Image (cartoon, rainbow, N blue to C red; front, side, top):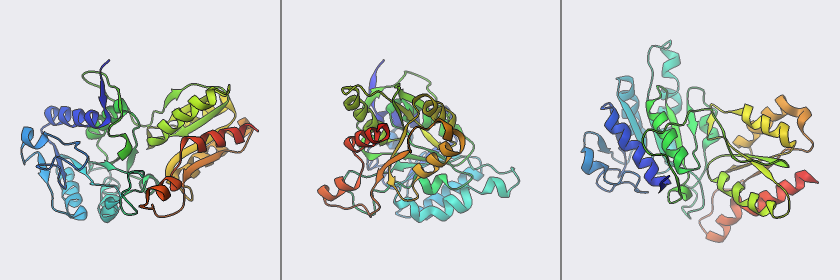
Length: 324
């Protein structure tokens, strides 16, 4: 199977959906002539022109509102946030309108739109460009939230998102854009709410998503050399969430560690742990631990930023702690 980057996989998904459905269009800052801050939309303005690839002014509330209106009117907009940290400016359009219009219209008015872009730390982009905000959106009924970790999942989930009739929050970790991996040729769809076992093991379960999957795989290699085999559950989407796969894994290993870049306090890991406690308490042989971001605004200084985000050795230590 060919290997392409996460960025190329996203671009393939956009091209295939633009070709498949004339109602699909892209809108965002610098996605046209500049071809996107992370080059996901490279070449698309030349291929499809300004009516399918819209360069928007610097106004997240404005162009997100345009997309909501277009979706209500039957189009399928794909909004690019230059960073999801800027998506906070459009929270009213996303949470108070896009997420609720289907409910408020008694099911008469779907809002088929995707809002995608980078979210996460590690690129020295400082406090207003680096945070993981998935728990904010997963907390809002009416939104689906995807955080793919691999090129294949990025392509398959983005195509599924564009065809969905609900508003989708699609978060891409900036560290993953250059990651290469196998992606099937042709039509490739990944369903929402279906987790993937990225590595099988018997001693402990790591439940994670996005960059956390790669940290967990690195930690698993280290632990395997010491005779400890961990199972890695990549949730892929956190709303809807596939807790059945996560709980089946915990029932197999009897120990669990949750990993994410988001702040630890009130982060999404707390929801995962609560559901395991509710559904599989008797299966646990040790408390469930969290490896997460420090509860601070993301520092710009590289050494401080590295101290604020999770690393593979932190996961190794947490797994060993659950085994004591």
